[in-house]
Image 1 (cartoon, helix red, strand yellow):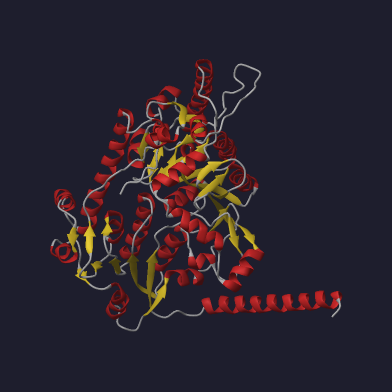
Image 2: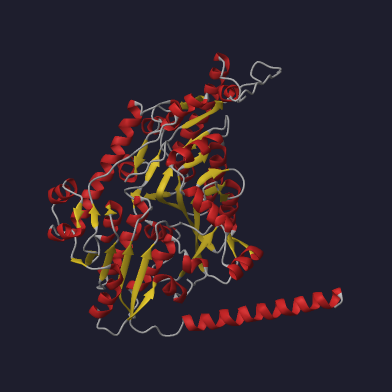
Length: 580
């Protein structure tokens, strides 16, 4: 066969394959619009959930949205299902949740809205469910566990990791500085325990979370606040004891819950996974549009990408391009900026801040804070017209830190020596082979002071308040959304749906008018990768990232320290604040 015939045959086969895929897609589209009949929605609550699709998505025969719906997708589906006459009930299968508390609260509010529409909700909790899982399930009409399981409702903790002892043994000397007495991120490398200011700030955060937990459980289960607190303090419980205490409504194996929901709906309904229900939902229409711009991950320069452990890296260039598109398009009447970021590069955050400020001069900009909108995450939110947070959002942390590691001791232990020639008194300031001299340390601190004062000025301008007011709330201190609302760092409490309602009102879009929600940044598709994955069903990168994610926190901390950007100013949340 000649080369020309081979190419022609390949093109014909490729065209036939494309036509088959197109016909299948059309068939699925019409099938999705077929009448559903009576339906019980089932949702296998994942251990993790994203705010947006990943920056790169393979274009394959599998539907990313069906397999991995975002929080916005899930909440929207539940809101729609609450008004859908075909949907009779909802079943939540809740295993281990590695969500943040703010995200869990957002889903909880949507479930509560579904139940308020007069439709029953069933929550099945997995083995050893703890506070976060129970908090989500507690708003259901019936909360259940298998008879031999344990409800690990016993209080909250915050644990922080310190690497100073390990660095000392390795001969690595941290050279770090910060501005803001509460900016404790450097303590991971420079101390073996919390400083008094860090302990004060973390204790206040934990107090707020504990109060929210007590109040939320009391409200959901009809306990008094004192009863709710006592139940938490006396836990954990075996399932039968939890039933006796009124924490559960029945004991039932997870595999039997769907059948119970169908039976109590009259027996004629059928179970439908939430992802399939999402496929049936029509796209939002209308000539008037609101842009939903998602800022998720650690802030870095350049394009958005994935980090070592599969975590999101929020590229300033990617987000600025998305904001600029939303600003320039006349059909987009308002912008909702959804922030789920602990911060990152101060310079990259400033690039995003500048574009958010330009957007605010053109059209309404509403910020919706998810789990984190702290340090650089708060920096980029500050120019908005209105900022909404969840009570459990971690925000604030207005401060700067930077530094480097001196690796010469570790090299000497390995028998490696080095010699450096330089010109200029500060030429070796960022060298990884020496500590800061007194002069270099003074110069370095002056740079950080300047960066910190710029941060304060940006917040003061965005919040339209004097700098001395910002200073009183800054110093790197982390606040919950509840505390931030009380102090004026955010304008109110609410979720993404609330932010969209505020955006509609600011853009003067009537409640009865149709509006399309356009999500940005746009996903970039990888055709060849997706085609191969569709054929063979494997993804070595995903397996590698999953394996890295299972590494102990100490090992991950050391790997991240190895890649620390020497001298770069960081507006980043201290430690890894995880309330469990």
